[in-house]
Each structure stands twice: as C-alpha cells, then as structure tokens.
Image (cartoon, rainbow, N blue to C red):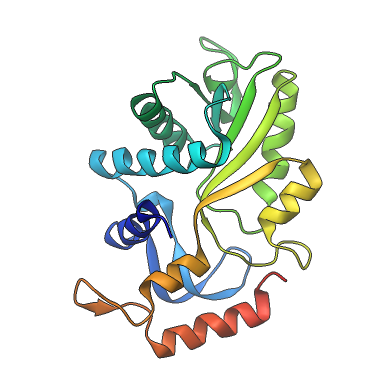
Length: 224
C-alpha cells in the first residue's frame, strides 16, 4: 500500500471523518463504519485533503484532463481544494466547476459555478463517497447538457466496496453503465488492513469484535 494511502486513512480518523460503531446509512443499511466528508472544516484539513485527491487523480488519470467537476454540495469544496493542489503538485492549471441545486436567473446566471464547460473538455468528477451511484445519475446529465464533454473518470475518497443496485460494486456499476473509469484514494479493504489490531493514538479502532462486525456487513452487502 502506498504511503500516502496509509497517511490518508489516519487523516480521516484524525479529522473525525471516518468513524466506527453502529450507523444507519441513507440507504437504510446498518453499517459498522461511517464516513462524513462534511467534517473536513479547517484550512489545513482542506489543504491536505486536496493533496490526497490530487495524488490519487494523477495516479489514475495522469494530467490529461481540463476540468474537475464537484457535484453540489459536498463536491464544491472538494473540487476547489483538489484543483489548487493539482496545480501546486503537478504544475498544470486545471479548472474547477460545480453545479447549483437551483438555476440562477440573474447576475452570474445558469446552473454552473466556477468554469464554464466547453465542447471537447476532458472532465474528472470528484466526490466524497459513492454507495449506490445515484449522484452520478444526477451529475452525468448535467454535464452533458452543458457541452459535449468527455468524462474521463470519477474519483472518490473511499471505496466502500459494497453492492450498488446489482451484485457489483457501485463503482464497477458506474464503469459499466457510463463507460467511465472510476477510482478511490483508498478502499475499505485497505482501511481494515491498515487499522486492524493496530494501536493508533492510544486506541485500537478495528479490534476482533469490530472486524467481525465489518465482515458480517460485507457478507450481507459486499460486492461480488
């Protein structure tokens, strides 16, 4: 596992973004872990988050793209932070773009924030986590309505590695339905590998009992 992935796992824990316990997800599933990217709230956290995204995007897609698109609302700060970091780390000025939930009809009109989209733009979508793929169902039409863009791929921070609407991983479903590449900074398998029976900041976050709960969750909801 790359060093930046290990650091990112610990960064999620330190930022109170990744938690272990008992949680009810939006899907109704009862999960022993929960990720909330809304807990990244400070300047230093957003700076580091942008750097982790930029490294993962570069590892997966290189620098041959023009725009980072972050769906509203959580994707807005993600796209801004990662765009700044990408420029600093790799010396290429890409543009950021996000959407509004409601179309603005005065001043800076339209549905987009940041850069406009142009025919031929190569776009990477950036999100926090994808469980069912529903957000991409909403995002893809928005992009295609604005211009004839080429969606290069999707980057999330954590691949939960559970079923979407079928037996497949939600990210694999997106690849099949939309024909785009998908990637994640880390997978849940890598999280477990790094934290299982390991003391971090005086705590063992994934002990035998938590590992059993995670294994049981994946026995029920894991992707084949």
